[in-house]
Structures are given as C-alpha cells and as structure tokens.
Length: 519
Ligand code: G3H
Image (cartoon, rainbow, N blue to C red; front, side, top):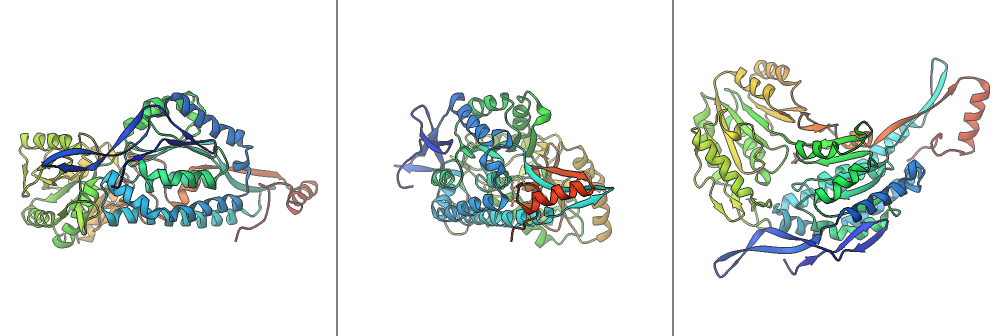
C-alpha cells in the first residue's frame, strides 16, 4: 500500500476530534518479504480511545436523542431519508478506496471486497424503499371495537453498533443504517480488524447527519464499550461477534430489560450429504460454502456429514476441487485463498488440526494445514468424530472437518445437541428423506438450504438463528422493526374525538398523527 494511514480522527457530536494519545497499529495480513525475511506489514494506525472519549460520544448521542425530542428522532421520515440518500451518494464516491483498504486490512479478495461494498449500497437503497412502504402502510386509521387508532414506528433511543471483522462494512451497515433511518442516535465502534476503511467515510458521516446523531469511536472493547453500557443509557445493542462477548457486554447494563439486543453470533452450520446426492454439484456448493473468504463467514459450512457409502467419492472430488483453488494476494486474479487477518489464527488452526489428528483424523488433501506466516493452506480433515475439538468448535477459518455417518439419526442428534442454530444445508435427491429431515430440524435452525450452501442473502429474507447463534431477525424489512417500536395513537370513536383527530391531521399539527404519503 502506498504510505501509512495514520488515522487520528474520531467523530463525536458532529466534530472530527483529533486524538493525540496511544495508537493501535494496523497490521496487514499481507506481510512483506524483505531480503527473504518475512516481516509484519504495518499499514496504519487508529486511536486507542479511553473511557473519557467513549462517554463523550455516548453523551453526544444521548443529547441528540434528547429523550426522543431531539431533531433527529422527531424529524419526518421523508426528511431522514434525504439524509441517508445524501450519505449513500457520497459513500459511493469512496468505493475504490474502501475496496482497497478491505483487501489490505482483512485480506478479502477483490471480487468479494467489491461485492461487499456494492451489496451494502443496494442494502441501503432497499432499506429506503422498505421504509417508504412501511410508512405508507401506516398512513391510515383503523377502527376496532369502537377505538380509532393509528400505529406508527418510532425509534428506541441510543444504539450501540458493533460489527465483525469479516464483513466490517456490510454487516455493520445492516444495523447502523436501519438504526439511523428509524430515528435512533448511534455510537458506532468498528471491529478489531477492518477499521481503516472507515477513515474516508468519517467526513461523509459528519456532513450528512445532524451533530451527535452518529458518533464513531475506536479502541479496545474493555475501555470503550463496557463503560458506556454501565451507564444504562444504551437502548439497543447491535453486535456481530461471539455469544460470550455479547453476553459479557449485555450483563453490564444496569437494567437489562431496557436493552434490546440485535445480535449475530457464532455458528457451526453443517452440510448433510445424503446417499443419493449429486456429488459434483454438492462438492461445488460445499467448497464455496466452506472456503469462500477462507471459511471466515458466519454462514460458512463448518462441518460436513457425508453418508459413509459415498464418502470415498465425495472426499476425492472435494479434495480435488480444493486443490484447484488459487492461493495468493487478495487483488490477484481468481485468487480464492488469502492470508488471515487475525493475530494467532494460524497457530489456533494448527492446534485444531493436531487435536483432530490425535483422535484419528488425517489431513486428506495435499499441503493441507501448511502455514506460511499469516497464510494457512486449507486442511481437509477425515474422518472426524465427536472426540475432536473441531467437531463442535467454530473454526472460522480454512479447516474442513468431514464426518462419515451411517444413520441420519446421528446427524439429527448432532444438530439437536449443538449449541448453535444458525443454518444447515441438505444435499440429496430423495424428496421423502429431505422432507423428513426438514421436519426433524426446522425447530433447530433459522434456515434450511436444499442443495445449496448456507448464506445470508438475499437480504429480503430473514436472517436469524437459534440457541447461541443470534438474537432477533435481520432482513431489510425486519431490521427496520428491530430498531423501532410501535406507537399507537388512539381515541374513542365519538364525534368530538373524530373532530380533534381530523383537525390535527388537516392542519398538520402533529408529525406522528398524519395521513401524508411518502412517494
Ligand atoms: O459472516 C456472516 C455473513 O452475514 C454471511 O453473509 O452468507 O452472504 O456470506 P454471506
């Protein structure tokens, strides 16, 4: 990358403030080779803010919300939409620099980095459209049992939004934008990795929203997030990360019943390959499902159950396909496997592999598990069993455990006993068996994919999970609901009340009780 990015600004109360304290080095997963010696590649730095700055950011958001009477929460939806539209327009101008920073900082390949950016823009456009629909649907009165009422959606308060490193733009913005557009004020703290790309967006945020509506802070969770949560002034906690992290933070709120959680957490999505599955298409889906972005997707297939009678042909074709995946730098053409951003990740994955070997698994693909600094060549493990850590632990990386099974009950039992319940994939052709599995597993996960890998999209569909995998449901429409609550304005159906309501509407005396229509 050309030059270090020293990013000292953070956004509080509509001002870019300059931080002169301790900084956090941003190290690229793409290391440098100098005279044959591999060296850490520091590409920039970001502020390590303290409790003081975090509380200032929170206070700015609290003040802008002003118990729901601030400019932003009371602004008309149509006007709020114009702010978000302006933001989107300006954000689109930053595409090239954001994509480049995603590649350098989290090692995501070029097409996937571009897709992350574009998909986020589309998500914002869809959100605007959905909000207009929602508002139009609410522009009416109902009359039930002699009570006239109008229902509208209003904000919840101050939202704390924290995204993950694997989709630092997309997953963060799928909570941040709905939170904002519904009238909440926000403190946003980026993930541990995938932070520098926010720099070009800081001024865009500052210029497109009233002061205090969006505040962006940097630093370690302990010093920043905990202290804000302890004040009890956060009303919505949007977090994508581990269930342990989410629980630890939620517990800090003095009145947890006041805190709404919108959480995307751990997952261990299984693929279930039935005896009659079409091997070629199943292998294609399973390779993409388990190894896209090096397996660092919450929706990745993290364990593959294959019927023992077809296991040999499946693993042969699967390992052949893995052998064809091109490894290299994120910006190189057709590269699929790239260096890993997390510190200590290759060591952790090696430990998982060694543990599996100890209990009888083998690495069945050539070069599987080879490490070169931050790079880990995908390791396909077979046969995996319940004694191994990788059987239950979410590897979140390029290790693929394959389990041979005899009876479907073994697989059903795995899903039922699992702590996670995001999604699963069934591969097969026998409709009766697939129907049976659907019925056995429909109450275990949030989505069952037939002859397809697990995935979040399309964003119009609900994205959720059971057990330790999620709290709440996200989709373009659901997110608007997640960050709002209904307010019902009602009155008894009599002539006097009707006259009052009609006058309020006719004379535009309320921005809530109204009949106007956003086109
Ligand atoms: O990391 C979790 C992402 O939401 C997964 O999204 O299935 O589109 O890769 P994706």
